[in-house]
Amino acid sequence: MTSFIQRKKTEKFLEIFLKDIDDDLLALALKVHYLGEDKEKLDKLIEQHQKEMDEYSKQFEIEDVSKVIMSEEEKQEILKSKNKVEDGNSFSQ
Image (cartoon, rainbow, N blue to C red; front, side, top):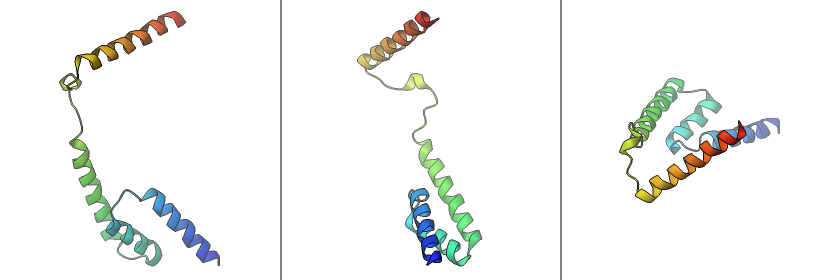
């Protein structure tokens, strides 16, 4: 009974923390956890997955914020909120 409870706790842990990785990687992680096999293969898959995620996230990086396209209304809203923050800071000093 204790091993069943431990297994359920482990499954819940893996479900929460590994939910963003693909099914093959999750299946291999469970296999390694329970059977202790293919640790090198798991490490390679995790490394490959991390590289893929890094490449994917690079698509959304913006190096120069001034290149962001905004409507004039959005720019004015940002300036207004920035001025409000600056005004608020001067009163608190």
